[in-house]
Length: 164
Length: 149
Image: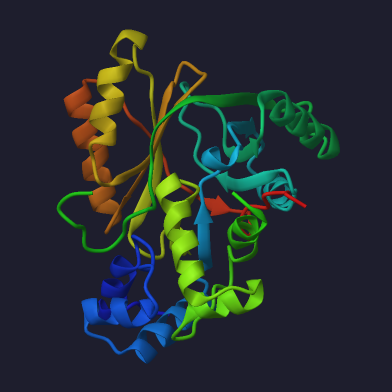
């Protein structure tokens, strides 16, 4: 699916979320010059094309009591990383799982998993379980707990507003 | 936060209704009015439990994004973190336990614009920025199970 300029305007308009009004798609449409029906149809099309991976209420983990989060990283041989990544990505403990490049010598890890939990011991245990279940013992590994959140907002794409 | 709030937060993280009155559709499932759903969501947003009602986009299909990391001398962390957070293109910015102690996500309309933000931060902070773009993603995003049941 190719995104048209109109789609990009819509993507930008929903970047801050739907307004909390009775007819939110109508309100978004008014902002970008589309009918309510067209807004709904284009969001549906972007969902079906996989451009929108999820459409719904987006919660903030930290405020809901999931105060511990760790970025758990591994150095996995390139020919194995996709297969192991798929298995880790399917694990219930893992909220995000990505392959990213190594940056030697500073950063030798190529597989990144986020694990969220209510407290640090819970997250540590979840990571131990992952290592055991997926036979990851022999691979280079680090766990980077977050100690402070300076900023967390929704991703902004498309045309940017001057101020946030 | 009561049981209905918990259902609102947990049950509609995906497949939010694409109908003219979506909040009324939620209300029908939860046994409350459209106005009550809107009121509760407004309250949960004010509290910070709800970030927004909206879309999670597949990375790299709309604009560009990357994960970036910096090794900031501890005495400078406050200043550099504030500098990084000041960019509208930065949407997550965390301190983590590692020599690379500041981690942030940059999203922008194009990969070139992402690169320009990283270069600008690096120049203004006087520190190297590691660029760790996504190469492959493995997780199917079904939302976040709040495990309240």
